[in-house]
Length: 258
Image (tube, rainbow, N blue to C red):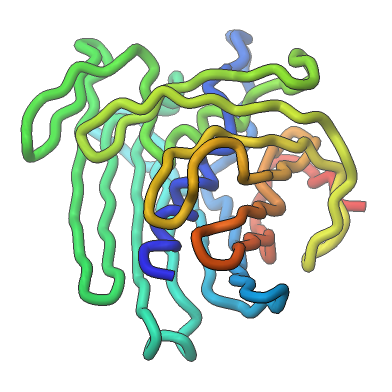
């Protein structure tokens, strides 16, 4: 299970595209004070147990005299399993309210005996990302692993056909990753929290220590104006994981719960 929670926090935002609606009067799919929480379940030999949790919280702030959204994503193991492997991770993203482009990203990983702190400052006018190791050229509208989720929640999936693949770019670990989302269609999904009308997606994953890469992960997001993930399922190197929506507060729109 080592580093599983870091990868899950990366996978949740990766379920969405970068296609933002081009309406000048755009009404964003979220608002300050929104909070979304998930339980992470691990399965071995078909038996699931509650391995941990992840929470996304949104607020409104000022960044260099500009209005920004600030999202904090926390991931942790269930305390009763900390003796096996303890995780306390935090991701933060600041992105402007004008076009949802990131201005700063912070990642603090605390997993067992592994620790890492990363900070990125984005300059969208010069298309650069600045880290402690240097200045990197990035594509226009590049996102971090948190801002992409909120940028893309404004997508209208009704404008896409089944099996369309929607590309996006993401900056992480001093690299640009070109990825895509495979739009599968719509269906009803039953989770531990309830039953939802949902949009079904398969993101292209990067191969790593936990995930094999490719399109093995399946994600369902609400088929409403919120577009929040309600379930994620994926095989991993040993066993499988399931991430279920468990709680939400201050959603901007009614949720498609049946």
